[in-house]
Image 1: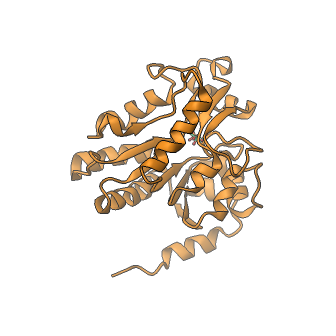
Image 2: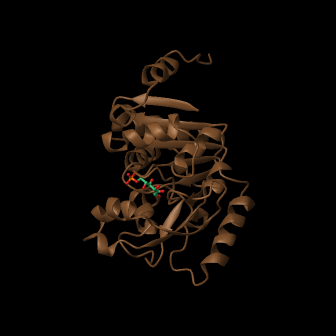
Image 3: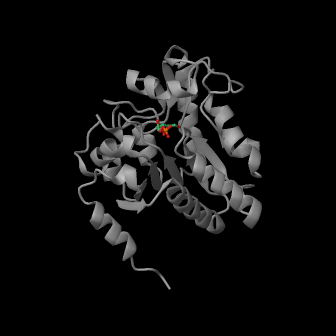
Length: 258
Ligand code: F6R
């Protein structure tokens, strides 16, 4: 695992965007796994800037989003469809046919989830998966006790996630109780995973994910078993890490290719 600690939110957004942009310059038809929520907003803003100022090309990029609330149509302003178009896709030259987001209105969720998994495979798997982390340790909506081998499926949200996400709705009652989410097993097959975390409210969970035991109670801890997992943290989110100074030293002294 690589742990990159930046001074602030702007720093983590730029670091992740630079990594993705560099990858896209080498592989323009890359398959990106994308997350929603407040954490990746700065990353998406920076990708939009790179598109506008430096011609970063999304025309061949394929995307798969991690999750979607069940029962919210794409037109709902809190659906993850709406979020992605508002915060990224409408501002870059992505081909709408290349965008995949779980269908929260699917009539048969089980059939839909199998199809989603097959589509990811048909495109050759995910090159870079962007992740946030919930205060309960979830990645995507893999709530505590999710199988670390799980695949895309229906998941019941925990009260903690409902309360955390109530800030986007009028109140907690309006937060959907179910979501379709990629599984931990699905995420672990991405060739690179980049987890972004910002703010002190994530510090304890981040420390458990990186330095605690691998456990389904903190689904992000499964990334300890991933061959190429990168945690990009701002100082407050990194503040509970036991080896904080070591990670910083490793990053600052990383041998650079000439
Ligand atoms: C969203 C997702 C979630 C969020 C997590 C953190 O697609 O997969 O796991 O990444 O809940 O959310 P924020 O960034 O709002 O703190």
